[in-house]
Image (cartoon, rainbow, N blue to C red):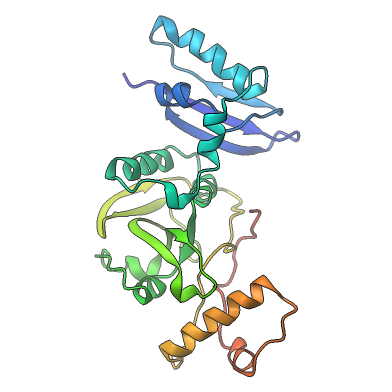
Length: 257
């Protein structure tokens, strides 16, 4: 029997803000990611004598009675570019996502790991080849890990080894597609929240008109990033010309991140 631990954190109004189900041995070994001073619900598995003592220490760290070791804090703040791309590490991320209570929590977790949303068209722009199942490339929004953000988006660096497909527009579904090393790996079933909160912030999802050339798209992405960095920056004639034709996907859910 595999030992699991489920940790649920709530705000002062008893609204859930984090919900994770992971390997208990791993969680006890690494400790909580951060401390929480609000309501908490934790489900343990006590299969061995030492599990009780480990659970007490874990709760003391989670609630602030004991400090979280500096090494654990460092892991939480680790730069995504420093995360090894071993298949074991990537599969550990998949298992972590698999245990999430709903898709909002999964999206929040992936964003903490450096993942951002993008379209399949943008994936192709960077030359990342993915053997999509029929229809997946058009139906899903894709989360891919950004390991370097440059001043010009065309010079951004992404890790194409692991991507997650989540439907955020029409036809929300609990199916979350997982592609590993460019090939279909599996489909996770993660519930859709009753009132989704995650939106399209921190995303490279821009919708271009079909008649816009690739060089024009690349130039617009660059100027759009400059505009995001400094909204008061005087836009160029090129940017003003295309701005009304280039949009982000219609937001059907408001962002809280």
